[in-house]
Amino acid sequence: MSDFDYTLVEETGKQLYVRALCDLPPDVRRALAHAYEKESQPGAKEIFKTMLKNVDVADGKKTLICQDTGLPIYMVKIGSGFNWDGAEVKERLTEGAVRATREYPFRGSSTHFLTRVNPQTSVGERLPVFYFDFVKDADCLEILMVPKGSGSENMSKMKMFIPADGINALKKFVLDTVIESGANPCPPGIIGVGMGGTSDLVTRLAKEAIARPVGQRNPDPDVAEMEIELEDAINATGIGPMGLGGDITTLAVHIETAHTHITLNPVAVNTQCWPARRARAKVYPDGSVEYGY
Amino acid sequence: MANYFLKTPFSEEEVRQLKVGDIVHFDGTLFGIRDLTQIYMVDQNHEPPVSLEGMPCIHTSPSLKKVGDRWEPICVGTTTSVRMDRYSPLLIEKYGVRAIIGKAGLYEDSLKAMEKFGAVYLAIVGGAAALETRQIEEVEAVYWEHLHPEALYQFRVKDFGPLTVAMDTHGNHLYFDVKARAKQRLPEIYKKLGVV
Image 1: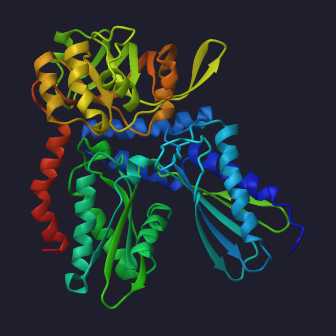
Image 2: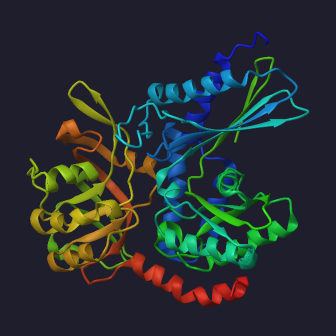
């Protein structure tokens, strides 16, 4: 093991949580500004104006965009070019989330599933949610932090279709889920979709999909085309911002895929609200940190 | 779509002129309530220590900081209303609440109470807590402090809004209308998507 000082990872874990809550990524801002321009219904336009104003107020006052500080999710990519201590990384990021909650301070949202006791730390049994992955040809630790609010998370859905249902069943499921969710997930957000894999993997794919920058297409052209088709279909519903009617119901549909079993055909939807919050950092072995989105 | 600027308390007449789609801003008193506030008040029979007559109530669980004996807002945002639907008719009928502010709306019984007793549902832009917090001039009182962050809060607000009238006294329900229209369009959307 090296003598890398892991307090840096803890500090980064803390900074990322606060940054994600206060500073909306530029791609999301652009998408909201574009929606404001494009929207034809006056009531809906007023709502987009308010959303953009809110983002500005949060910038100016360095304050939270939304009061729902969510559950912390850390998606970590470990570069193979350095001897990162994975267990230490996990522990330090957890401590970072606790410190963000106490030192900012903001409302912790994590709760014991049975007693409903809130420790006011944002963490707890098996929280934060961690996704670890490993990458070759990199020496850095790349951390993507997503605070997930409950209004949108409560609208998550997964279903195991059969191969005979085909791809159309998956597309219909996505559309039906969005209509059923209506105003609840604070539209227009990112509709994250997982297709393929197992029941757990497909759900994880949908979550990875909401963490992608708005409008960045899936590299597979067939999947990218399906993203556009679904965006058009969802926006044709007229549900609009905050479910009060309008032209724009989603900022983007993102689909992540995986191979599946010959007899499986799973799909999952994870919705992200219009303040699609996330923050990214790259921690290097020399102790430097690069922040981004 | 008309624009209204109101001051609290709201009169029955003021509230009855509002129609779904109208935009409202207001100045004055705003009460903050949440799940636990209403469980304590309604299910456990605690009379509110302050009159809610003619007042708006917002569905919130605010982050506040106590400085001496004063409370300062850190972040006040709005939560989804449907969880608190069953308490709403009583707030309107028994306590004279004239407006319920939240996101995603309430159901039929609340709509009926609004029509009968004169009250509206005002939809706020969810997620816009930074702006909402700035529109709160002062936390005037926190009643039932032991329930914090789900106590009964009395805020003084300035130019609070924009709020969209989403349920009015004429039996109109904007969320129901929008969803019904979406379902009407659905066969055509399915066809275009090639899923039928």
